Amino acid sequence: MKVTLALLSLGVATIESQASITPPDFQFRVFESGVASGGEACNFGSVNQVSATEWFFQGNHSNTNGTSMSWSYLVDPDPFIIGTFSLTNETAFGKSYVIDFSLPISPAIAQSTVSGQMSGTLTDSNGSGSASMTSTNGGAVYTALADEMFVQSLMSNANQSVSSAFGTTSFSGGSFGQGFPPLAGPAINSTIGIRYSFTLSAGDSVSFSSIFVANPVPTPGALAMGILSLLVARRGRRRTA
Image 1 (cartoon, rainbow, N blue to C red):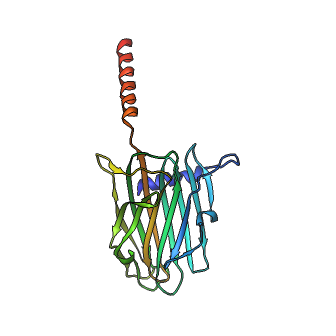
Image 2 (image 1 turned 90 degrees about the vertical axis):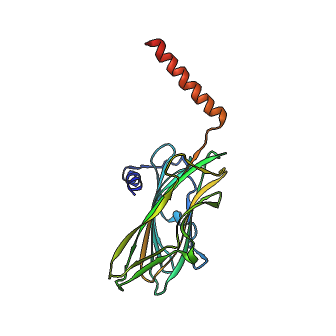
Image 3 (image 1 turned 180 degrees about the vertical axis):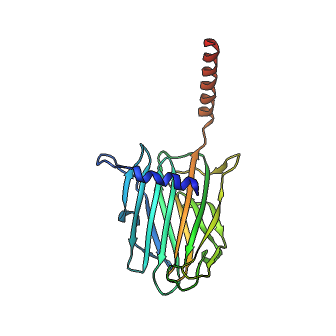
């Protein structure tokens, strides 16, 4: 995903967040076989401010359940989430995971349009000669959330596999809201989020790159003011000419 990679490169040139500026409470929680583990995992990493409203979160963490994770995310409470998340199942048995990312938004959005996309890689990290990643119970690997409610999903009934020692395969999970007209979304009061849900084979790794963007739809009054501004500007240019 070229857009994701380009935006994540901003992390190289971040500026340290100042004590007087509070970063958004961007968090993710990990559930392993239905049990919460690791808590609010973004607390294990670092955060840097890259613009007036954008923040770059990155880090890594290994929990006591045999799961290691790393993440790099650019977020904006106005709002979007763009980034990469990687996970390795270091145990000797397959495990199901649910990872919930959540970003508080500001201001609230009365009516939205939404877009998103995802891709990933699966790796045989232990050299066993095989690896698999499937969506849990035939559901979606990626789900976009608003106020913790379903918005759109990608990669339902997924079944990705690797059949060579230390082999890797790449996959595209698709996209939504990329065309015209924009895809209508819900009113959003407090948060947007991304949920990953999948089952991963023993000793193997999976990485996801994803985007979720919500844009406010202008109210009729705001739209009218925008058109009026354009007309006034055009009239001024004509008089100058």
